[in-house]
Structure formats: C-alpha cells, structure tokens
Length: 85
Image (cartoon, rainbow, N blue to C red; front, side, top):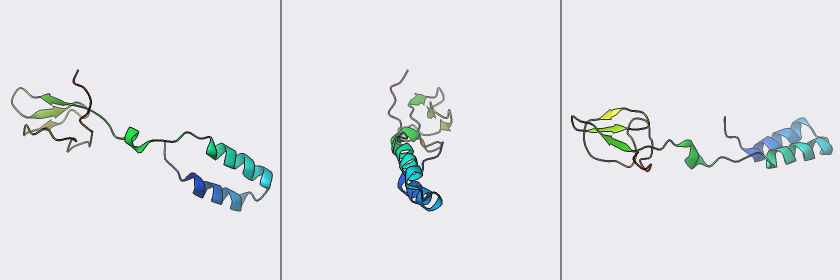
C-alpha cells in the first residue's frame, strides 16, 4: 500500500490519455478510491511493567529501562493509548 496524490494522478492521466471519455473514467476511479487516515498508519500499544523494573512496549516488545510512561514508544513510535489487556 502506498498513499498517492489523486489530484496529481489526474493531471498525469490527462497528459497520457487526452481522450475525454478516458479521463472521465480515470477521474471517477480515482475519486472512488478509499482514503487513508494517517492516524491509522501509526501502531498503537500499551506499556507492560517488566519484573526487573522498566517497561516493555506491547507493540514491538522492546524493553525501556526507565519507568517513565511516555505517550509514544521511543523504539517503534507506537502511541500508548491502547487499553491494557
């Protein structure tokens, strides 16, 4: 999956296919493609207390030596807004 600029794709298509019928079909196709919310691309997780102290990220399972609960994992960038299981 890769996000694209639909407006730029329409301009490119207009250069490649000047026929108005083709352009209408391509524009309709691009207009009906699903959009992606950038927030959905960021992983989510929660902090797990490690028995020896420190915390573990539930998303990447990497250890963080201090017990300060940051809003994001410094290793994978996961937002720590998921409810603990």
